[in-house]
Length: 375
Image 1 (cartoon, rainbow, N blue to C red):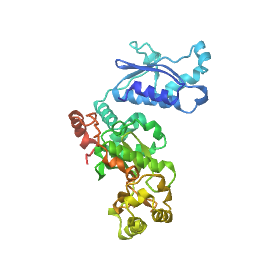
Image 2 (tube, rainbow, N blue to C red):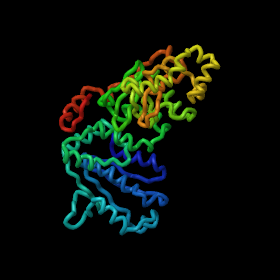
Image 3 (tube, helix red, strand yellow):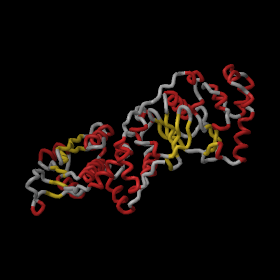
Image 4 (cartoon, rainbow, N blue to C red):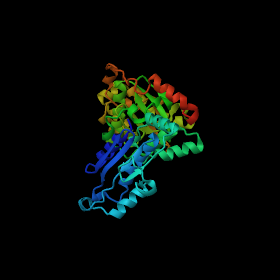
């Protein structure tokens, strides 16, 4: 749920010693306290927080209220300047509750009224259901809405992909370990499916990236194996670069699959794999000297640090070409313990969080309006 509380929590998690007392009561948002530590002031953090709150207020037709801390004891305690503080709130669009702007129903000294627009509210909810806005640091709903009104056609799928790629360096793998695909981008099935196996599905999210989504616990293991080979650094450039890893998905750079390559590119891959195909899973498990020599010639000797599903690893169908024209192993899930193939497949139950009938009808209603196409 993207609300005032989640906005406050987002910034408290990022800046542990920031002081924020902002809460929603009925149809009002009250800003009681925002104190940015001196060592990170003048970096625009306060502006980002208020813009997030204003975006939410404008999308929901809520009035904002605040009384700036301009008493002598406040100025001394927080190290702020009265004139600068008042100017800040006025620049953010707040009006002083006096003179012709006096509103006797508001006790605060500053306020901002927003107009409820059903279309804006519903678009905000749709976008919120589709992508976790909390993960996008510089998202501005008001800018998004203006673009929508101007063009009356926004491809939300491309927008999501663009925002994921823009923020790929903001959240590291450890921070996303517990994030699942539904929490991250919502209904991933609206993206074009470009590949499918018994354990994982692959979706093209645009901008040159794909998402590999696990269907079951084996798929999660394959994602983990692929992530390990990409991050361990033993064999650079063997698998596509991993941009982000979650609980049941990974986002990787898109490559051209073997089946989509031209004859010359297929020859390159077949030539690389020709010598390796002479060996078997047994040769691999016994670490045969001839096999080690063949791997060394291909500069793949560090593969000996891993387990392999040998036949899948050497299958041409699992290879491809990246955007730098390098030969890449596309199915990094083959790099792992062969025994896991015989393990029980525990199907992933994503419940009905995003697939319930109510939401399907809600999205369907706006398909034509904002070019939100289910592929």
